[in-house]
Structure formats: C-alpha cells, structure tokens
Image 1 (tube, helix red, strand yellow):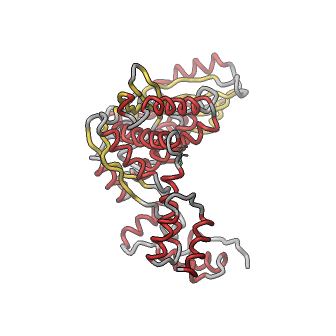
Image 2: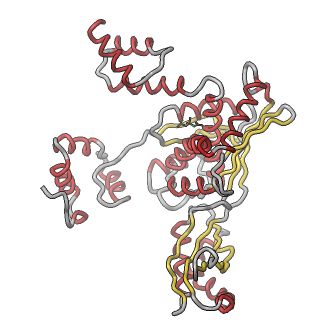
Image 3: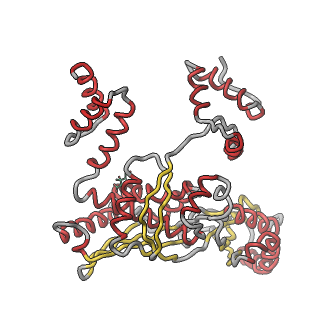
Length: 425
Ligand code: MEV
C-alpha cells in the first residue's frame, strides 16, 4: 500500500485519521482511539487548537504544574510550569521556599534590544553603497512608519539601522542591521514586517536581497537573576565546605563545555517550562540562550557563583525575548491563565520571573549534585512512574516502594522485582 498521499491538507480531520491509521498502524482502531482520547470534548476549545497548526489530528498534552513561594524583588509568585520531566517542579518548589526565607530572588533587566537583518549581495564599490544607504536611511525609516505607528505609541519601534560590510566573511555580502524595541510583544511578526518594508524600499537592480528576518540571537535582551546569603545559612552542616564545592561545580561548568551543556540544560528545565506555560516560543529562547552561552568562542555556563567575605552569591545573565501580548499569550487559554497567575506581568517582569525559575532549577541541580547526587530524588519519581505502568495491586505497590527505598532504581530491576513478587506475595 502506497504511503504517499496527495491533497492531504484538503481532507477532513476524519479522512486524515483514516488514511493515517490504515497506512501506518497494525491496529488502526487502537490508533484511532488514542488520537480520539486526546481530543477535547469542548468543540470550541478543540477547534481553537486545530487552528494553531495545519493537519491537526489530536492534542499532545504536557503536564501543567506550579511552583509556589517564589519571592522575586519582594513580590510573591506562584510560577506555572509546563513540563514532562519528573523532579523539575518539585525542585523549583523546594528552591522557591528555600530562598523565600533568605531574601528571595533579586532580578533586573539589563537590556531589551532585539535585532533583525536584511542580508544582501552587492558587487559594486563599498563607498558607493554606504553613500546610497546614508541617503536612503530617512526613507527606510519612513517606509516602516505605518507598521511602527502603534509600537511607537507604546514607546517601542526601530532604534537603530546600520549598514554592515560582511565581505571579509563572504564575498559581496552586506547587511542592514536593524535594532528594535518591541515592548510587551516578543516582536517576531513586527520585526519581520518592518524588515520586508525596509528591504523593498532599499532594493535596486545592483542589490540582491537574499532574505529579511529577525535574529533569535538576542544578547542585548538580557536579564539578571541573583540569590545571595551568608554561607552559614546555606547548609545545615559543613556549610563552608559545601558552599565551596558548589562554587567549584559552577567553575567546572565555566571551564568545561561537556559539563556546561548539562549545567545549562538544568537551567533550561526551569526556563522552558515557564516559557511554554506562558505561551512563548521556547525554540527561539533555546537557540538564543545557547548562542549566548558560546558568545566568547567556547560554550560555557550561563550561571556564576562566588563566595566573598562569607557571603554566597549565585547569579545568571540570560537573554530572553519574551512577550506578554500577541502570539499564543492570550489565545491559548492556559497561557492566558498562566499570565494571570503571574499577576499579568509585562514582558520585562516575565523575563525576570523566567530567569529566576532557571536559576532556581540550576541551584537545585548543582546543590543535589554536590551533596547527595541527583539520582535519589529523581529515582523516587521514576519509581512512581514505573509502578504506575504496572498492573500492580496496592499491596504490591507498597512493597515495591519500600523495597526500592534505599536501592538503585532501574526500569528492569523494578519489573524483575514486580514479576518476582507477583508469584510470591
Ligand atoms: C536533568 O534534567 C538536569 C541536570 O542534569 C542538570 C545538571 O546536571 O546540572 C540535573
């Protein structure tokens, strides 16, 4: 049976499902049931989701949880998190509470500039090009005026436009590098529309515009989150030794890319979960954050730690292009709810909350790694997840939880033990 189809997008949802299940599944009925189980019975809500993308067949749920007790710049937050990985929300909640009684998170916006570029090829005299650009610049701004009108009213718009000679990197390659302030919107559509208008006004026969697009690299849309406290408040016992080990762990992530990637992955556990819950684009955030982590030519830790005069200080500088208007933020009911839960922050406040969530996650991971190790906490939840998949009685479940209390958990070992007790209990 051919697995190639034409006119797929024109089929009804049911026709798409029928074609798919008939062609790819051994048990089409079971596949259909699964797809249907994840439909929302609320027709309006389902249609809303259907329209987010093309060829929607069902929904793919992520757990939505919250981490309470976050104190950020003196204000209390309960942070919404959409994430499938066990331990992340538990760790955030633990760390939120921990720092709440130690002054909480202090955050600040360092910058809010975003960038877009018009990439073009030009074979003529560079001086002539510069002359043309300088002459055209007022016209280029004018070309965007209808687009930037509302944004300018809100205090945003285009803040700078420069011609950049990139011919040392690639023959005949130039760009117009445009800086934007997009206030509470993430700004992707706004930036791209402006760029296309500028490109159209700039183009002439000897200028070949290749593309006009925003950059997800946003090193000038930067937020800092910090926690600090006297070293002796950090651990119940051996505080100095553990605090120093914590700092050394961060130094290792600064020096060693293999560790830095995992270290930063822990940060992104917190960042992405809030970015997704608030309806923002986590792929854009991920791409920008990792490029920033490698900005000096070697991938390194996003967070920093030090002990000075008996005070432990732990902080992160992270680029985050986020919106609290536009995109999915008001369209997705759970994103809207998340923003309300966060007391309807503007984008700068959301950047600070997300940075705090990332730092919290990093604190939890590094603290666990440099003390008990992370497997203990992870495995407790892992065990619960494995047990849930078994057809175990309550008595069998209780036995397994007790049995693995102080033992290493692996999927195989749990299954083996389960099979063993099934016939013995
Ligand atoms: C797991 O999702 C994240 C950690 O590996 C982060 C880290 O190692 O710092 C625990």
